Length: 79
Image (cartoon, rainbow, N blue to C red; front, top):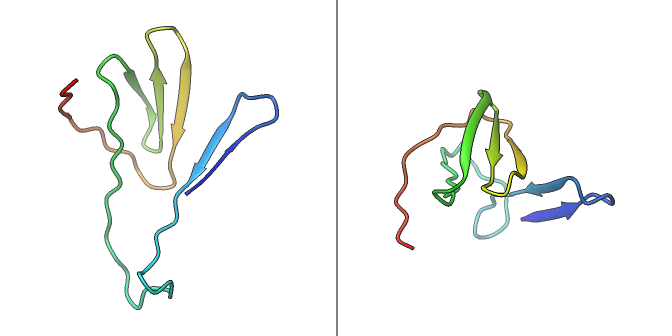
């Protein structure tokens, strides 16, 4: 995982890389699901199929963008 913050502190970029155990390219296409669990106080607005707007209680806004379509699912919070 690579994470970087822009010089002005306004953009946080995270890139995940998936690899095989031996580090070699996969010999076939693999289907994977990546899930991110959000705190229940975070409000999510769908901008388009690849973009979500995350709103915090304090009024901060984060934009989540993906190269593949985003799907929202219910999740459990045990806190």
